[in-house]
Every structure is written in structure tokens, then in C-alpha cells.
Length: 332
Image (cartoon, rainbow, N blue to C red):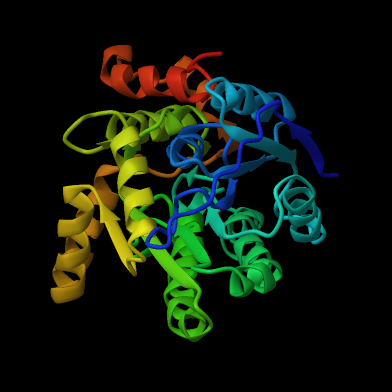
């Protein structure tokens, strides 16, 4: 059930004619922590009226209070976006508080890590519901608003995993490939109605997501490689810088944004030499943890960290980012 909650500050300002992200009525999903929280913060700083959406009511209220502390026009709605009735409930909350929606950021996601042998069909269905069908339903419901407003904008946060099939992340990869195709197709189809669609394909970012990811198979071993990759500077990107780049891309109406040098290089190599990239991915898969005869399922990263052999210093940057951006602490 959606539950809108309101901040005391509600100072809308007129939007500038050249901007798609200044002083707009905005909805950000997955906004209680991590990248969604940071994108919402960037939009608040641009005088947007921002509705935050996430499943956890307490985390969402924490995020709302944090963003409203400096006078931002912020409200929140607690809702599971995979519920069939979610789009109508969320948009009703936006309309009640701020009026017609002008900018939609589809950011909510779930990261599932493990070998294919340890994954179940339900894991793929959960990923698809969260990262394909929920955004599809929300975009469809929001289109009347977006078409009526000047410079209606949709930002879909997909992943470089929607272009390069990273091993041990197949539910995530399958959903992100589908979401990327949907987003790029919508860009072409909605342009005639004045709606701009920006597809964002980030690589790994330091948000603390390793503690919120779900692990399958040999959970401590899977956590070890993923947490290291999501925390080390050469492999991951500062999430605040990523959020700024995403909002700039939306503001300019860009078709696509690929974030992190590794993601940019990987996507180019995959496009130009797919056989070479497949060989590299095969090698990477062989280096990752093997299957288990008795796999575990759906272990939260914060729990997997307790028995992981990975030294804590390796994830220092990722852990600090998680503390700042609302992710659960490793080992809690």
C-alpha cells in the first residue's frame, strides 16, 4: 500500500525554458539510498520538486528528512514498484503533492550474484519484475503527464551489464539487457510526442551496494569478488560524480550515457569484437567461485560479509560510501 509523507518545505519555482531538470516535478524510484538518493539530491539542488519512492518506509523517511533539511521540496511514497497497482498509487501521491509529473527516473533495482547452477527461475522473474516490467508500467502510466508538459523526460538507469553479459550475474544481466532495449526503443517512439528518454549504462559505482546485493551458491566467496570490484578505485566510480553526470545527461536530453572508463571500453570492445569479449568473459567466469553441491540462496551482502575471507580494508571505500548513502553495514 502506498503511503505518501510530506516535508514541511514546498517551494516550487518556475522551470527555465532551456532545462529539462531545473524546477521540475520529479519522481525517483529506489531513492531511499545509494545512487537513487544521490540523483534525488542533485535534483533537489536544481530546485526540483522530488517525490521519493522505495519499499522500506523507515529508510525512505530518513532519506526524505536528509534531502528536506536544506529547504528542498521533497515528499515520499512507500511502495513496492512490482505491485500491479503501484503506478496508480505512486502517481496519485505525486499529483496530490506536486501536480503533473515532468521527470521520471527509473532507478530501482536488485543485484543477484552467483553461478547459473545456483540460480532459480524465481530469481530471474524477480529481476525482470523489478527492472523491466515495473519501469514499463510506470512509464506507461506517466505518459499522459509527460506528454502534456513541456520537455517531459524519462531517465532509465540500466547498466553496462545490459550490454556486456557479466558472469555470475545472469538475472541482473537478463533484466538489464531487456531494460536497455526497452529504453532505447522508447527513445525513438516517444520523441515525436516531445518526451525525451535517456538510457544510462553505469559500470560499478561505490555506493555500498555490495552489502545490499543478494548472493547465491557459495555466498561468502561470491561476496568477496563482488565487494572488491564494487569498492576498488580502478574498477568502480565515485557515486556522487556519477549522479551529477546522470542529471547533466538528462538535462541535455542525451540518448545514452555510459559511466566509468572500464564500462566504456568494455562496451566498445563488445560491439567491435564480440568474439574476443566472449573469450574474456569465459576466462573471467573460470576465475570466479565454482558451484556448490549444497548452494545457499538469497543471502544479503551484509550477512555474507561476516564469513567472507576478504580483508575489510579492501572494501573501505565502498563501506564508507554505504555509510554515507544509506546502505546496510557489512556484518550487521
